[in-house]
Image (cartoon, rainbow, N blue to C red; front, side):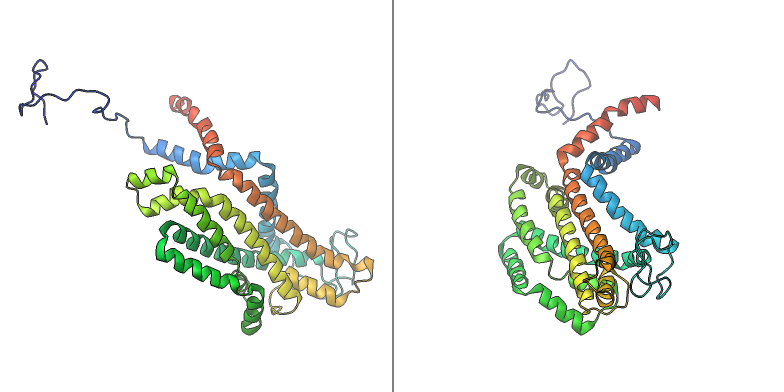
Length: 343
């Protein structure tokens, strides 16, 4: 509908009355944001705000530092430290006596510090592969089952309950004994087989409540696609559960892999902390307290890495808190006019 050129004429060209500029007919006059502003808002919301929340939380700092230290050990440390060799040093050199062997040596004369460093890559590969597999499958099945509902929900939860009834550790022992996997990634995938059903059940119950929330219904009414709705409304609210379960899966992978290597079920093709425990058990007398450090060194590495995952996951609960992130994002937004004026 078009108006006549004369402002005094209040009759439309089609003979109708003009539409008044009131609250119900007024349109938005918001100007399009520039690419620079959109990039600044994206960095603010997805990079600066999460980092600011993480820095303020002590648990995140300690846990992240521990995990980052092991990652550096697995990448840079293996280049700087020579691989351990049999009889490279004296037998049962006590720890903290010489800089050449800071953590001492075992019954085969191997440097314990070098063994810890060169065990880190295989351990992290197993942890990453197993935790990603179990967390990914658990999140996918739980989200689809809870959001879709109906027969698909019944079928997926029935399959989940079937896997829950299988004794996981026994299944892993049988698979490891039959296939004798040598690649740490394959070992991690086998260990992650039985870790996803509990997460899937937890995710489904959370999705059942989230899909009835007002913001989810608003997104549905606005016509957003299911992929966008699941990503922005469902998965974003599930991230605290997902991060905590990722840490728990990582801890299970550590404990199960060390146990299988210690018992000799998995082949000793790569150096890891389970192999170190097995060699220590075979070569020392557990009744001699002066040699217990050979077992304590890999045990401390296992405990510290597990603690790092636990603290980091607890801190990520705050990082994924929408209100905390929005508070830090607004702090950056308040500085934008000054920055623009400066430009």
